[in-house]
Amino acid sequence: MSPSEPSSPQPAPISGPPADGSGAAPAALTARAPHVPADRLVAEMVPPPRFQGARFDTYLPDPNQASQAEAVQVLSAFAAGIDGGDGPAKRRWFAKGSRKPAAPKGPRGVYLDGGYGVGKTHLLASLWHATPAPPERKAFGTFVELTNLVGALGFQQTIRTLGDHRLLCIDEFELDDPGDTVLVSTLLGKLVDSGVALAATSNTLPGKLGEGRFAAADFLREIQGLSAQFRPLRIDGEDYRHRGLPEAPAPYDTETVIRTAHHTPGASLDDFPALLEHLSKVHPSRYGAMCDGIRAVCLTDVQAVPDQSTALRLVVLADRLYDREIPVLTSGKAFDELFSDEMLRGGYRKKYFRAISRLTALARDAAPLAAG
Image 1 (spheres, rainbow, N blue to C red):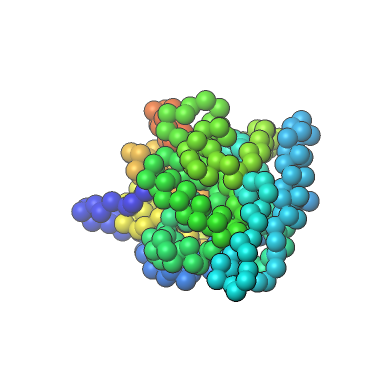
Image 2: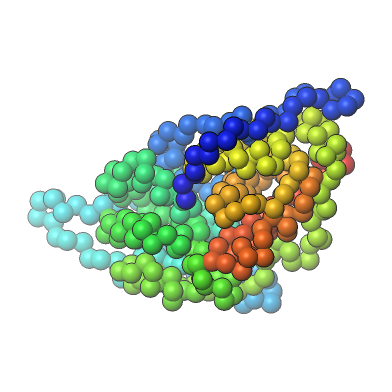
């Protein structure tokens, strides 16, 4: 997904103190267009802040879904079976008198097969933490972050950079772009040859409406020659963010949002249509850096997104906000009105439902800010 280059001028961000004159001026996301160097892309390939504390023993399986408890057991064993030594993982073909090492028996990867909200990212992050290797020998990122790394470093340098890792975790493997799928599948094949263990989750292909999930058989077919390297691990269940939780709070009035932004240290304040316009000018790989130092996001005049390109950019921003546990306080439309019925029936429906689910959770987190 590449940002377009609109010719229309950027709307001005909201500014000025609340009516009572109190509080400091909040930041504006629309004023941020950070540059992210390649070395930061590599260094940040760790579980996001929301999942820094994720462990297998903090995952709470749904007692009605036996597959969730089974997944913890299987992944724990998978982590224990990964060589965590400090020496290079690459095979030393050039060593004098050495023989070609025996290929590891069994799959070198695991695919977490389940719908959104069943805790796949928590389990993926738990696997990263449980693998007995130093942090610099493990990598964790979304498919988009991995393709951004290839774009920044080049294909061969990416292989050299990740080839001595013990584990690569890929969250939300993007299967809706055949070109990128082939590129990353080829990359993963090279990494497996270097001894890197793999773990992945994926999204839904366009046209795959079914259960809101992408079936393991389809995933294995799409990654072509890598299918033998992955053991599918089915995780059933409903979205945990809605399991016994109250509905998301209704949007606030504009005055409340502005007042909260000025009274909350580290808050940002933006007009929602202006923010959508700004996202079209910033590459999605920079959305995380755009949120650096932000402790709450306040948005006025939330509206339904006008088109699919805009919607997909908003999905990326929602993911970065959720990863960083940044509360979101809004006025205007509710989050379940962001995407049209046509979008929610289309090929990217899983992404949109995930964004609604995550933004709803962040709206709950923001409620105490408005009450303060």
